[in-house]
Length: 254
Image (cartoon, rainbow, N blue to C red; front, side):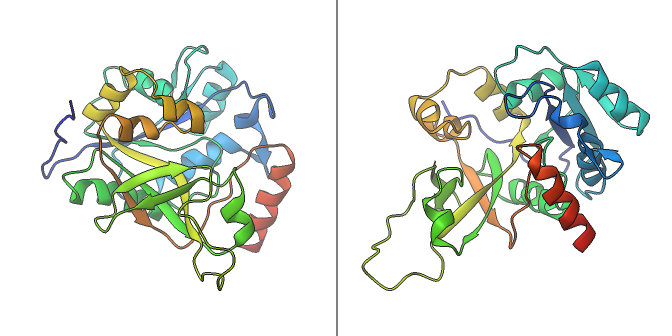
């Protein structure tokens, strides 16, 4: 059964930043220094600049991450290491927290634009039919369109997601003139209605979610509505140690 979204003028918004210490490609990634600042602190600082948030919480499984966040003046909640996903970590961190809207902000996004978070929150507030909201940006490059690490999304005229995939969607006829826009790249930032977050965390994984390795497909499988709003840029994240130098270079250019 699809849960009715919570509507109303008062929407208490909480940003939760999941920050797990373990990573197969980059252990201790949240503590990696960008300049002189741990990455998780930079992400928290960006979140604190949002106009739409009432509270920012870092959800972690490691005391060293908790320590650097609290030294910076942030709020951090310890969560179990064995939680299966960032969404489960967010739900665990929200125990006893009053929230109507919950934003999932990844802990490896130090360049996230606070205004982009505000766009996602506003989209969910203004579209009372939606259970979640997220962002996308046009794909202008054929290489990105066929790259399985670039998640694609298709949506209808109401800006409601139809499907997310690592495959190139929609189909493009390569024998014709190349399109100006190949498709739309999904940006992994989510705003949930708290009631819907509780519902999906309590629900089993969908087969298509397992196949694509995309958690947001659980919402579509359950009959939920994901609102997709467009922004004009990608926010590079950190997946490997080599990405740190790229982020530092981008910050210097800014």
